Image (cartoon, rainbow, N blue to C red; front, side, top):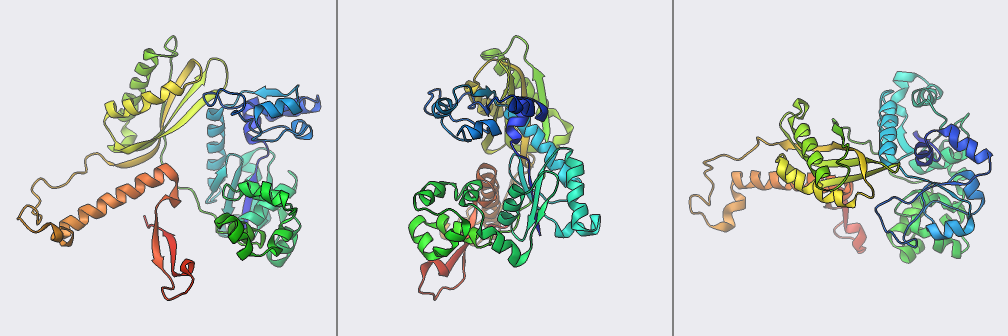
Length: 420
């Protein structure tokens, strides 16, 4: 059984300060929306609003809508400055709270997470006690749903109330899922683009989508159509727990050095402090997060993945200082955090390695030598780790022969994740 934890309007609540303020503004009839992130496209056409309140939804404003269209539909729309720094901190705290009860959590996006509940029965007993533990550790109203797959659990969570979770199993869950709106596909990045064409075709529910046929949808929309059909039929991949790593961070109030070359010197101090931390244990840095608190309110945050794992302060500073040019406003505080570590900087090859090249062997035989194979394997592992740091766990896949004699090309070979 998969459990979905959904916190409605998570980014809006964090940006506004607290949930009580959003409720007060909504009861007063004011429509709220998270303002477009600063530092992006300055033209009004390219800017899009973030999460919106219920009053804004009632006036036709939706998350992801262009700013000009949102203001045309609701001229009195109140824009709340986005704060990705606080959102990331609050969501990380929520993830650690869920992991404290033993859950292996897959964070889909801020405010939405999944985990398998079967392994927690030994800790909490019944499923009801597991859901009660989730509510207790989060300490805020959440919507929870449980079903046989992630997508079914998401549909249950969206239909549930904050006081009572919705739990469905087996065929009952699949029959109930058939009557849900096709708009649920918008919660998946791979299928979000199908909402508009499906609406033009008159497809309203997931049951209607399932009756169209998987082959027909795949032929019309490609792999996204096949995935949408599998989701509508109650099929989905299991949750993939996140990889929890040690997090190191350094922050510093910038004072008068809120921009320009002075801010780069502050960044240099943060890099030196981070590399000097004993918790680093000589490891290199593969990915880091640079964030800032802005004088005008809100925050700015950017993830930086280095081209290779680094421990050189000058090279790290050069890679990060370029990102300061995207800072939308003067800052009051600068923060640098390590998101992913690389191998220790002390790892190096042997000084006198007796390889075939050193003995004058033919280049074609280099790969056959054990030393050459180990070097090549180490480089491949490092390349795979770097790709996963940039684009996630599915960035590196390998081809596995399943049915090489099949007449259908798609059945001959499948893609599988490269093992760690």
